[in-house]
Image (cartoon, rainbow, N blue to C red):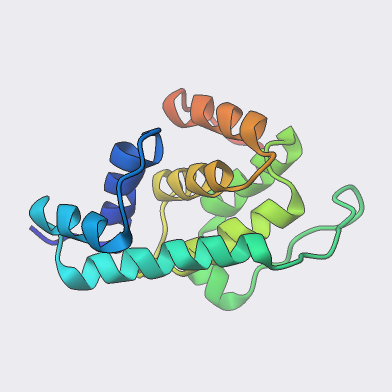
Length: 157
């Protein structure tokens, strides 16, 4: 079975992030992932992805006036995040679930996935993981969790 970094991240998110009990160090967690059938390469890439997520908490992002600004995607971002993904991010920002800063972290983490294209379902999970990781985003996380499991019929573009 071909596993991807995203598969490892989903496995970690579903099995460890909600857990209140500490799981030990990275080596212990890696061993558990190997036993679950993931390759060392994919586990290492997933840890690197999570390290990038953790680093995003450390970086200061300039405050942006979300009412008077808009996001222009680069060609590379457009190749990876189609109009449905871009529409989802705009929709979530208009609902107040995302801030411009959290949107940028989500785009960064989506771009860090190895997939050539990121579909809407994958992007929803990236949004959920980013919001889960960001202090003060508990309400946004709860809203996104509801949206993830109760898909709206269509997004406003």
